[in-house]
Length: 280
Image (cartoon, rainbow, N blue to C red):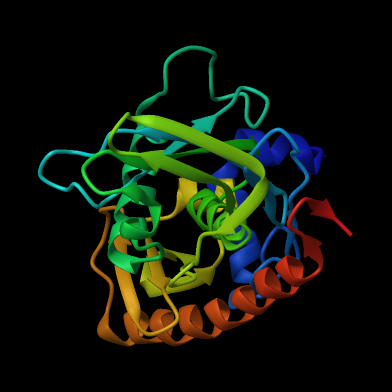
């Protein structure tokens, strides 16, 4: 008799189909169940803001570092926010050391689109002096455990870190170009919208499952990611594959909105227990 763990490696598709036939998933969840999420904020003291966001076994660390920069000539009142997603070999054996792979680059571009579409930050809030000096926020998102729905964890970690972001007070003298930074006085950067991402996977006969694991994502026929901010849906991303019915898409929208409300409360609750200089 073949051991279950060996059977899972040799015949992953059949292993998954056998579970689906029994109306369950390998991790014991129902098709319409999300994994529990958790968040810690402010645990990296060297960063201007940070968080750790977990969805099941998937974990992403976000560290934000702010640097002074000159604005673009065509946007003299706007600062910068630059996300970067890293999929480390620690997170999964399928990743190797070296330059970012295709998946990491695609995730970075997707996070950029979510930031732009959700209007989470007003980049004018990062302006210190028009046409002279602005803040550039470098947001490093490092996946330390990769088990599906990674974009959801990346967005959660980024929003949690932005929620408690505060920057040193800066005085700029236009006549001399002198800059004075006071690290003891902090200015909070308002988070205008708290975006939340939810991922779904579609299998044969339009079988829909919520919050897929890595194995489920790899064996699915299509995945759909829906992002809601506090007002409305701001992004839909479908990774190719088969078309999905209007009924399935409508169900995804409803569940993504409900999930967004829950995650938003989770992040707000975690942020309220954190002092501006660390944990209480």
